[in-house]
Image 1 (spheres, rainbow, N blue to C red):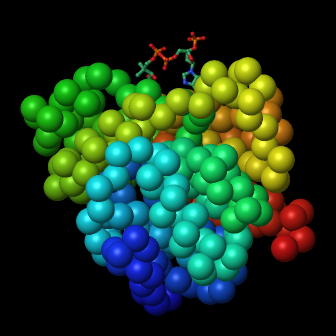
Image 2 (cartoon, rainbow, N blue to C red):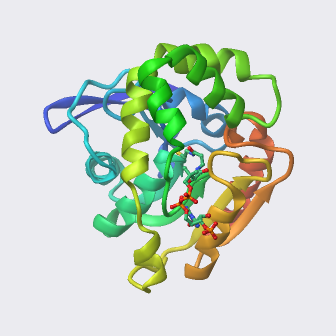
Length: 247
Ligand code: COA
């Protein structure tokens, strides 16, 4: 595993690279590329630190479209095209890369995400006014088991500012009506994967995608952070999906 950097729009974007296999993992709100270690180790590919996260430079980002532009350029310059695997906010970014930069997308892996990602007002207000307590509340909602709650309460509290910025971007992200109106369909192979006990992006959000050409896989006894809670199961689902694509 090594770190590589690309200069995108004049800013350093840091990428964890495990192999040349063109799968690109996009992390969610307040997280970073290291979230994907277990997928990188077993499946290979690239995990991107979004701007303002991990080891990437700061950049003014106001929307999912802004993040998608950066990701599309990274994919284009690294492999020409690839599989885009996004978690939560990263899944919104993956959808937007598909909508706005389709030539770089071979397939989509939408993990714990949705076509609309409204955020509880209590979370948005709480991160502003009471970050430690709210970070704990989010962490408790993010995991089905207690194992990671303590660590992520601290991590989210330390990153309350960027977490809030990301969640505001999630709250504005909304493709639901465009899907319903038939304006969007997945014309590349797409799988939506979700934890059975996900409280932040419930199973219903992933099932919604099945009306538009996606298949759906539900991981038992997992919450929102499936890549940490159930890495083997998640990797198995991704591996099976990849083998059917014959890439
Ligand atoms: N896919 C499919 N359906 C969706 C959807 C999605 N991505 N997002 C919302 N909907 C559905 C809702 O289930 C609801 O359906 P219903 O009327 O049959 O119950 C309808 O669309 C309206 O939902 P929404 O606009 O989100 O408003 P709401 O008032 O029902 O809920 C929240 C707002 C914030 C309470 C809710 O989105 C929620 O609980 N979110 C999860 C918690 C959170 O903060 N997650 C962070 C995500 S990053």
